[in-house]
Amino acid sequence: MQDLDYIELETASNPTAAVIWLHGLGASGHDFEPVVPELGLPDGAAVRFIFPHAPNLPVTINGGMTMPAWYDIKAMDIDRVVDTEQLMASADAVAKLVDREIERGIPAGNIVIAGFSQGGAVAYELGLTYPKRLAGVLALSTYFATAESIQRSEANAGIPINVYHGTFDPVVPESLGVRSVETLKDMGFEPSYQTYPMEHSVCLEEVLDIGRFIRQHAL
Image 1 (cartoon, one colour):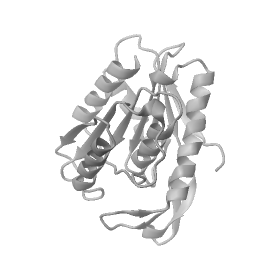
Image 2: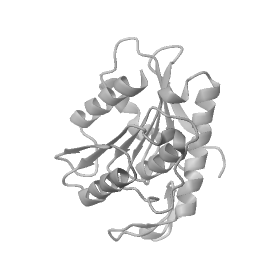
Image 3: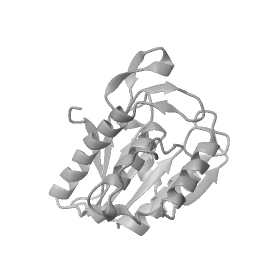
């Protein structure tokens, strides 16, 4: 996969932390730009937000239509039949952005990987396999698509993971969020799980919770 295009936003000069935030199917890096001022980060906190754009791929469940996608979804049953190779390739492409932030002087331990829906599935794969210890993983309205195949790194064996889900989500049912948490616990992680009375979206309460996670683990 070619290098990803992305949007970069800094809350102050000389960032000491970074958040790489992946959008969902059919969206773009612009999706979560407006969220940054609403996170409630401390005045003067220097955080670089990276919002990558997914490549354009044909998506089977949408009649083969080409759209921004981190991987193909072949069936929308409860187990989500996905193109695992494409998902892993996307995780590798995002890992290059993590590498770049480290080269720019931000410690791996100050880098958060966040993802919504499809982006969250990639965030799981990347966050749990990256060879250096990261600050944490934020999984928003998503599912653990590569739970059966993931090659976890020792460095991120105890990485903080917060899972957020809408109780009325008609796209990614909450049961998939619950299953992800149970799977992570079986793997030895201690994920936090929070729900909100919303559909397949984000809400202000969730955004504030994300801001607290960033303050606690990356700043």
